Image (cartoon, rainbow, N blue to C red):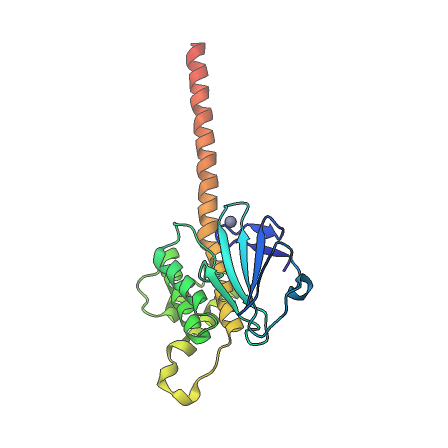
Length: 235
Ligand SMILES: [Zn+2]
């Protein structure tokens, strides 16, 4: 990949020797390289268990993230996050802890159990609706989504309903084992993308506009004070 997004601060990073170091390992060989080339071109043999360990260093927040990637035929396709534990975004402190925890857990088990991940996404979404829109007296997600119908766009509403239904597949699967419908990791990941989208639209945008309005108000009060000061001097 040519670029990378820092999971800690969401900064887009171009891969270079300052931002990415890759190590290749298998049972008997080890090689480090600052260059982004295929293992073969670095003189390393691609054996069935060859893995890459990538260290990404963010020039913006200085934090490092670590990912293990399978390269050999036995481990091909494996992408395992070591630090942070998944590619989930790290949200600021004004997003409630329980909501962040559900979101991060849903990400952490995405490949292991997409169904459980979808169930957690559904719970996360419910937490967001209850907290952000202050919906408290409804009892189930279906009526909670109804309660905010006039506050979100029709397409967002349909997406919320769809998440509720997909999450139900995981939540109610034990009722009839013959009727289990599978959810694959990419489908479960799409639900997480919706949560990230709403996290931005709801929490982050509200916070950013609050900050902007506060700034304007404080500029205005400073100007008022200056004006008062000047007119006192004139008297
Ligand atoms: Zn960063």
